[in-house]
Length: 186
Image 1 (tube, rainbow, N blue to C red):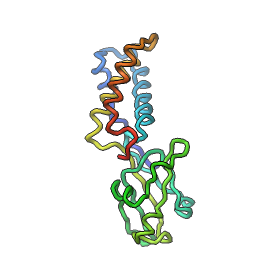
Image 2: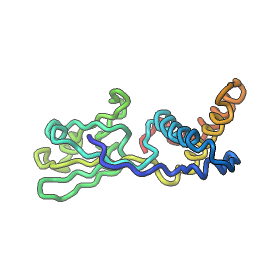
Image 3: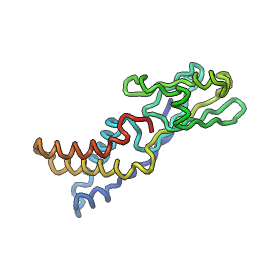
Image 4: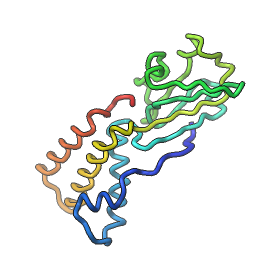
């Protein structure tokens, strides 16, 4: 599936500077790089998109009924040939085995709509397009962004040297903050 749109990062440079008690602009570019890196790190560690993301199917995927996305979908909209839309939420995707969390190729999620065909949701020949949406639930953004600030603070303050104690303490805090979403389907 191709990336259609992605929401902007909700962790701002101003928030990070406030968290780190930085009141000068000399390190803004460096800090922005750390913000971007923290987003990538958290998404990789949890297997979930932190930003709201929409993917659109290609004609080949519709024909083969095999779809590939970067992160677990939280919702799928299936547009049928008559332009009606069937919306499937997380619980339905799991219940009908649309998402098989064991099928991961190159850190991507592979899924099929066959489980829905089997229970009569719609005929596979009627599928026109599939849109998959992923992103962390808004209620989880506070701990996720706090974990990111901890990482950024550690990376910023220890960019030249490294101590095992600091890394271990920060890593433990980050793991605890991210544990509710790590490796689960949001």
